[in-house]
Length: 295
Image 1 (cartoon, rainbow, N blue to C red):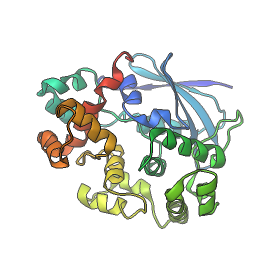
Image 2 (cartoon, rainbow, N blue to C red):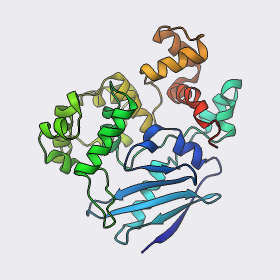
Image 3 (cartoon, rainbow, N blue to C red):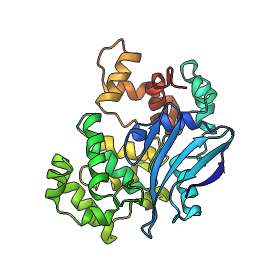
């Protein structure tokens, strides 16, 4: 039985720019229907209920079609607000970028929100899946995790695996079935730590620590270096770091350095004026072309 609920959005919210601004829309259990601009996700709650939902823009509102009957609607609406960053204040960022001709499009398009997962744990696992490999391999690893360990809905859709589900298998499972390579023992250790309560990544969302200190805490997770920590920090709403990887560097070289390599210090200097927003500024700058012909 299908249920439909609606969620109000602020005036400076763009559904399409939020969904398409980050590669997570390519990673299960997300699925993006670009033709009709409908974002699907398989939600799960602590009681074990798995509920696929389809989200679409309804002109100042989000239309959410629930495909499962056993669902905590209040939690689902909180999750939708979270993954689409509906409550994230971006006025300061918009004021800064309006003053730069090349970045004025961001505020004009109500861009800047980056799609994320309902939990920090899922974002952390997915971020580790992006390190030292192609995007195709990242997609495969995430799909394998969902298919192998995700809870299944009555319709056959699977949610992202819980820490407990990931902790129930040995490191060899991640190597042989998930094809996670060197990440395999990291996933096993991370899952055990979260499942046992030794680590709670969700606390990072509301941490009072300065970003530099929080970054150190995140880097204590094996498999997380500077890039992964700064990428995750962006999903926590902290944009102090650039999260430079080979792709971001190559895009900067093409757009701002006549396709010639340069030092990271030069890249940092280029975005220094944006202060604590520089990580979001470089991301929007380097992904602007993603929206060509899409919106």
